[in-house]
Amino acid sequence: MKSCVLRGASLATSIFLLFTSVLSAAQADKAPSTPVYHPDLKVLRMDVPFYPPLARQARIGGTVRIRATTDGQKVISTSVEEGHPLLKAAAEENVRSWQLAPRDPTTFSVIFRYESVQTQECEAPPPPVVTLHLPQEVDLAAGPFPICDPSADITQRHWWQKLWFHHSS
Image (cartoon, rainbow, N blue to C red; front, side):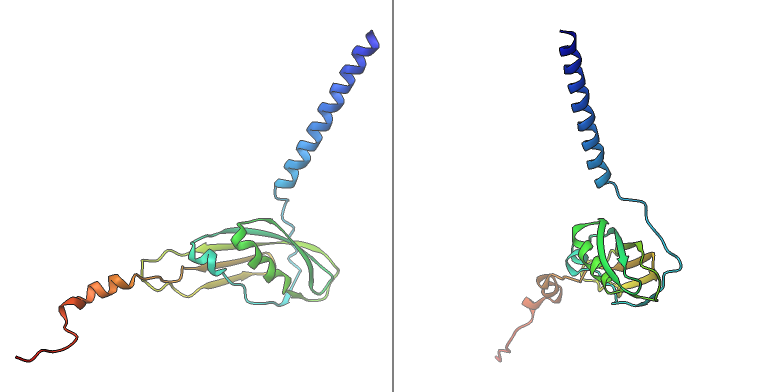
């Protein structure tokens, strides 16, 4: 009888340990890893980073963290560690375009910061600004595309007060 109790307790302990290890592994997958920086890494060529139009129009900003692996001269794989879904693809696509000064293969982290600049309705936003702190950081700032209500514009001109043809008396 005593061995049955011990076996039952041992089974419960094993299940508990298995459950906690699975839970901690799942939480480790969600938490972004510590960024890996290589100040000696030099980017020779790259595409110009852009603010995705849909994210820009929706005024979505935020940070995208990407882990990139190189073969020594170009980025061969990337993985997004965190970031808004509308911003991830543009940042990842940009990092994949990077060509580097020859060096040993390595893995590094890049942070893209997207900032949505607020503007008044119908006001043209300032041109997008890209600031590069390669290879660690890329900052992008842009306002939404101006969308104006044409009826408001017509109302301001008082179109109903102007005749489209002249009547002579």
